[in-house]
Image 1 (cartoon, rainbow, N blue to C red):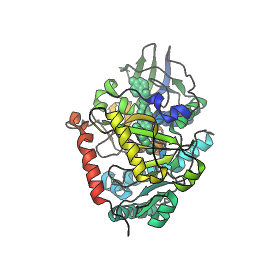
Image 2 (cartoon, rainbow, N blue to C red):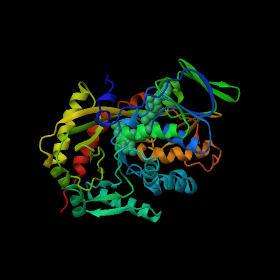
Image 3 (cartoon, rainbow, N blue to C red):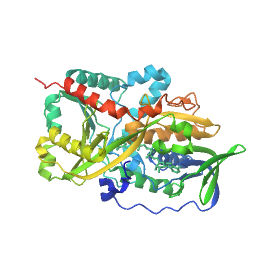
Image 4 (cartoon, helix red, strand yellow):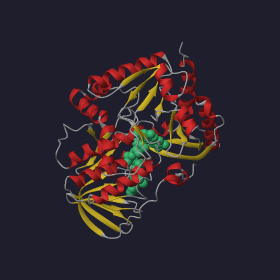
Length: 434
Ligand SMILES: Cc1cc2nc3c(=O)[nH]c(=O)nc-3n(C[C@H](O)[C@H](O)[C@H](O)COP(=O)(O)OP(=O)(O)OC[C@H]3O[C@@H](n4cnc5c(N)ncnc54)[C@H](O)[C@@H]3O)c2cc1C
């Protein structure tokens, strides 16, 4: 059992306190009800309100309490390395695949302009996102992705080993993919600022109001919490990995996956000029990828999966301190001053979905580990669909009933096998450049 770590994160320590939004303590009526104030729920609610609809957003705890307030804050305008734009077209078909690619390729630009338009104070730095390559074949994969994005008119660059070392201060990479529309933010500050933007647009935001039930009322829906209920024409469940008993069908279609984060001790300006001096966050091409960034207060932040087994938090902390020292030896001795975890809903193919549960009851899910930029663009597309501006055929992802994942309970054992296997393969595949 891993204890609740929201308040233990670096982001909780350095972010202005949450605004106390009201609890739901009345009965009210709106056009659309959004359940869950993470990035996806808030972006959807925001865009629906921009379209002139009456929207209620109801949250169990506080905006950003889920993965949205705990992530690494990398703005990544692409999917994981195996999912190039061409492979998305192969899965979704030409029309939907290219619409999806346009959404994700433009997601960094969209997110940074949303933050600028709403004057969000969230340490946003559009410094690009980098994927350094640990082997020649990984570099060939980066080159193919770069070509794929460039062909579609998006900014993407292939850096050689020397330029990668110049930007990161790290030796041993063969080169890197650089997506200049990416960057980094303070994720919890963005969540809190997004909540403020929603309310400014007229969204009725209720906090500390867990939804306990959703029931049909003729052609409308009623969303219930302990002290009140909301009636609306459509309901959107954006509860991500926390969907649990509220909708077991959605829960059965995802794998809740816990990730671990550390923030080191603070380093001075001098170190910040030597390591990751371009301030582009990096997530390398390894299976168990090495990810790192500077925080606004001069710490290295990063993480990965929780190592399974007894005393797993303490063991994982040690493993990550060692990992940071190994990958960034210039740092010298590394001490994790903040340690926290967060959970995302993972889909088997790492692509998002829109589940239809009943007429007017929707569950968009599966931004996986790419939700910072993707949820902003996906929320905008969802709002267009829910407002009737886009047909189901033209929607960016397939709209399906939730598909239960076979033998899902075994999937939680994944890290026991996946982590040691991945780390072994990473060691075998890593090549020191000539
Ligand atoms: C440790 C970690 C690091 C990550 N790093 C990155 C990164 O660097 N870059 C990137 O792009 N992505 C990253 N991700 C993924 C990204 O954080 C997610 O994809 C994204 O935040 C998902 O947003 P969401 O709105 O779908 O879900 P969430 O943020 O999880 O929001 C769900 C919300 O629903 C609420 N809720 C649940 N049940 C109920 C209920 N019954 N009633 C009312 N409300 C309810 C929860 O309280 C929560 O606030 C990371 C994820 C983790 C966990």
